[in-house]
Image (cartoon, rainbow over all chains, first blue to last red; front, side):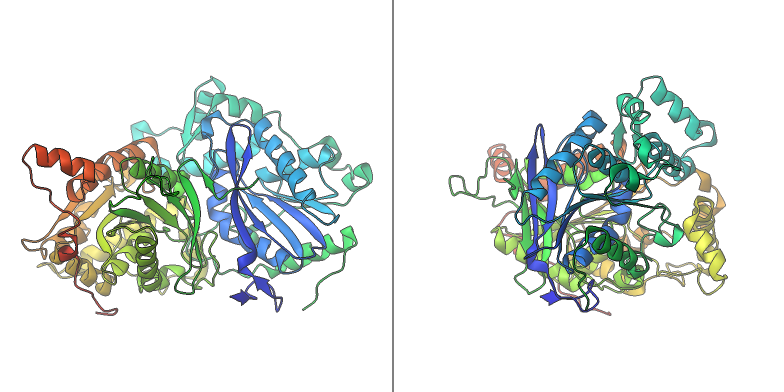
Length: 276
Length: 329
């Protein structure tokens, strides 16, 4: 079952995918290591938040396989309290999510050969990756559609979720998204597609933002003296970003996105590129 | 440091037929696999992906239900079909049509069989939501190990009804926007109402093969539990709703005396059943249904002491398996 679905001719060994549970304080994180023999680099993928985890999952896994097929070892995982990871979502904090990224990055760095470590965050994962990078957790940083702060993600997620929910309700029971924002601000929890958002999570989200050095017009590469790339994904990148149509985009060709980002990774880290 | 097992969950790979699929097994608490406790002889529950949603299901509701069913004595597994979630493989360009035409049926049936053999179970109930329900119905007809179905919000029509009539831009808008979602539903109902000719004739856009498989399973006596979410209030409750074709009623009418089809409508939840109301309702009703049709050894012993006969046991379980149905009938 060596295949080259994601590799443009590169061999890919599906038996080298190692799912497991990574113990952290109070929870076990679901991880999948895309193990590579003699890797040229390692990447920790920090994925998007709750609803987007589900819609972007296949494309995110495709990216992991694409990189692994080119001798870049990849670790991806689920936030604690989300997906296959254990933990109760309503008890979660950004602090624990950032701590998890730091622990996983530390584990991945020490796996073997001394090769560069890149953090790659998507959407909310971009913020978590940026925080870890800011504290020296990796050699390079790649962000796809990272928001200015975590509250942006919560607001857009809730707005997107409330739309269809309104259709299920009688007119007199319908409330605008601002109603739910107010509930959270008043200290009440709100359920969003099966996840119980606590008022504390909402409060914290207001202060979890991109490090100032990454906010334009600042130049993060100059500030950190390490490679940093920030990409705003367009609508053509669904379902990696909000707005995908389940059932019609699973087979999408992401080479327009994967190829240039792979080229940036190998060139900025100064590692050899794998050409088919 | 990294383990494949935590609490009662174990990460598994099923690949005996040459196709690797990744899954999460929820064991019955207290049934350690080191031989110190016997493995469960109760029936298992297998969860399938709804469309391309990973095996956790929306809002991770699948994790809750599988854990809960296992805690009640029914070992459960959630696996990703090839190409979905963590399982490797190509995915069809039009996944909906692929599923509607039983594209996943053979592999799902094979994995249900492998699951029951690997864990020494007498059979399994397949849990399918929405598009997963389509695969569950086709797969049930292909494997004797399937002893029952739990289905949530099934659909019965073929896909791509709007495509031939509208411009690509309009189709794209109708698929992406929420207003489009309502308009699609209204359009479908008007179309169905027009095409309805009375006397149980199927609407023109029906997935006839799927409906045929449903009828055969129902008339075979396979226990089937169907959950429906309430209708969107925005669609109203007037003529449009009255005009929609009731496939389940149509199928039930063909059931005959052996039919064990149960239908429950859960009001106050949504299509995913992932909210508090939906989760609790599914857990409560599905567990009661499992206990009724597939009592655990403990439940059976209690019932026997009280003088009740059990509706299904390991001894008679095979006699209730549905007759195999070939694809395309």
